[in-house]
Image 1 (tube, one colour):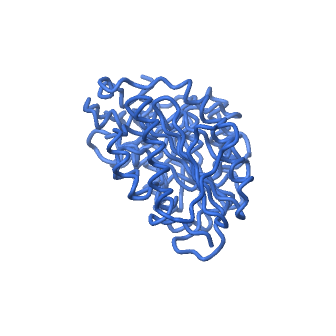
Image 2 (tube, rainbow, N blue to C red):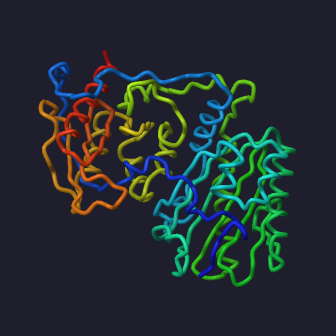
Image 3 (tube, rainbow, N blue to C red):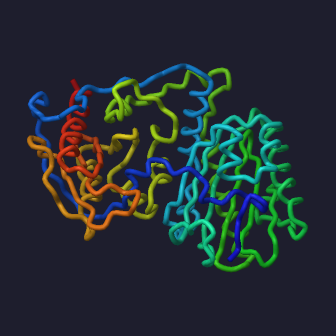
Length: 403
């Protein structure tokens, strides 16, 4: 197999942090859900869960702003599925909040001093492949895959120098590396090792560095450069539309845009703290990055008009364009051969709950999908009675946000 380790080009893509794994089950394409009707949420059995909208902490610190800006960048990162529709299996995604995260998850250690020297601010990375991510130390051939990373630097000069040196330090790490030109992108810094089916490219664009790492089925340089070229063609216009937050204003970024986190169910009674890992909010592109099946999510985004998502450790909320869009979201997650309908919470007719027949080790047995107007709340667990109370609380939180 062609391996990728920290002694070579990068940290393996498997090292990237997976956001919201508890909710990352696939959706299907069946339509319809029961019509919502207003009810007195005070009558619902929510157990020990709170029916009140949570408070979202807003510490107004630079570190908090870096997290928020990283998530904003995630909303303009090209998805691998857009580059190559065979790359529809999501592997991982993460906010790059500092150099430690960058070198642990993505880059070889030698890149750390470069990122520090040129003042990396924040960023976002996403990876998808044409098959599930291989297990660590797997001897099987590596699936085709693409990692797209966007890092923000203080200015164009620092981004340009960082891109050149990220590539240069990695190039010098192996004597067999050969420089490569990317069609249509003469300023891209790229190299590969002949007979190894991977290619890295690091390209500055304004104050951003776009770092790409592609695998193909075989060591085909033409195919590899084509993937990189198309990814850059898609990524650069997205960045051109992005309005970066001035560094001295990062601490002013709101932690609860559109108040969507106030519609989630908190995992703990204290204020929700947005960390970009267990608690985060994105628009539709972020929803795409976080999924297991990027093809299904792309179709659902279009069909339902998914506008924004938010999640905590306890729940996941999706906002669609309208109640019909919410119906499409709810149906897509509840109708599948591997799911069986189970009783939802009493008194909540717009809740649909399912049991996964053979859940993966990191997947819950039960899920409930609760529709309220243009929102769908998702909760999960392994105890159905407890989950029914949690689902009732999620409905109440959604409804109480409208009072």
